[in-house]
Image (cartoon, rainbow over all chains, first blue to last red; front, side, top):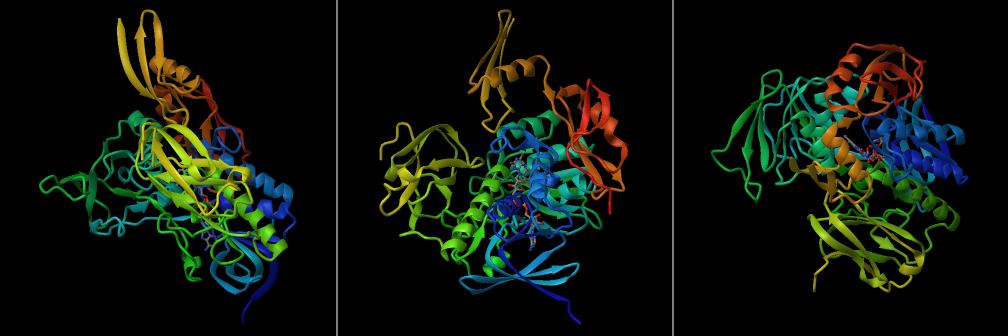
Length: 423
Length: 120
Ligand SMILES: Cc1cc2nc3c(=O)[nH]c(=O)nc-3n(C[C@H](O)[C@H](O)[C@H](O)COP(=O)(O)OP(=O)(O)OC[C@H]3O[C@@H](n4cnc5c(N)ncnc54)[C@H](O)[C@@H]3O)c2cc1C
């Protein structure tokens, strides 16, 4: 006795974080028959559990907490009447033909088989694990990813532990260090393998220095020990090649280890469709409307590229919805030719990967290494802006007009050049 | 008396490095890329303030906690007092966004930043 529910849509949005919510709102506004599917029992994604400010400065021109930020979108959803289901886990996507994809979803009511012309994939990121960062030893209770710890504390109100070591000093690790300190836990140290902090200086100041939390740069946690619960970690100094320096090992007693060692786009469901992946971002390759290599499947938010700002994630969601509309109206995205976006000097990644030159495009890029007093340039279209500083922790945003892009012949190149640079 | 020090502005992701010199003539700030940096530096060397955020338990809601933030930043040495004032609070759903949940701690109040509906 199976309970199979079949339904047809123009757009199925997978994942109810800021990217998915923004996509579903815009698609509904554009008159497309849309449904939003969320795995958890609440919508909102990561911002719902971010109680700190730092959201919305770009999109709303106001400094909001993650929770306040996402509530603004909940209100829009209600006003517009966006259809959604929570506790809906998408377990597979099938590509039938150009205008028909199938989204198989497990819900409380049964298995949904949704036929859709387009899909907007917005499932966010996954966190890197202990295995990926090479920490050996015991696997007792008390080891959490930053996201798990944040869900426990800021959704369920449970403090995961009292003596905490945090691995990774990106903004996520820094912000979690402050949350633990505020809630009365002792943060013994934040351990960072790089010689500089991964997150913004403002977060080093307000999250660590304010609470006298030690930041150990050029250090790595190499093992965890504990019978039932974490008892201690072993830390070692590393050289420039990130190799442990023998004889520098020491132990830190703790009952909790929090892993904040970075995020990777969660592309599980797309990988099984053999989608084209960019090794630099770990996410799908996309054109300017955020369509992947599979026609009619769009991607936005942290599933596309790890964003620092939810504001940019929302813009990507909206862009993907506009892409879906164009796709449905034209049976595909019209473009005479797709021109590659190339990475030039000191550019580690750039989104999108292809442009048509027929529409204005926002390019997001990240540098490979920090530099001061530089120009960010796109020589083919005469774009050049000055930056006091560029840092891997901060995305660079380039707004390129249709007029400028029409000048590009074969490709465009994003590059960073110091003021006095001569090639 | 003359003191020189360096601060990192925490008001936006630019994280400007501010060079502050304090003398009888007043406080001089350099390195800021906007006017807010000067205000921040002056505040930081006289009476540093921070927003405080936390969550407290909620009974009968669709989410078990509500998140709170200070309605205005409090002096840094008050952070612990604010946290203590919220530690054992338990509220009843529903709670509206912006609702004042705790009044009069260190000259500020704590307001809800998440809506909690009654569980259905
Ligand atoms: C600790 C921390 C601090 C941050 N601070 C800031 C900040 O100060 N300012 C700022 O702008 N940004 C901040 N961010 C970044 C911001 O939260 C992210 O950029 C944003 O949440 C990404 O949105 P998203 O919609 O792509 O993904 P998410 O928010 O992760 O949402 C993805 C959603 O998809 C759902 N999902 C996953 N798999 C499935 C499936 N198979 N089926 C159905 N649903 C699924 C998930 O449950 C989730 O709800 C912070 C992030 C963290 C972790």
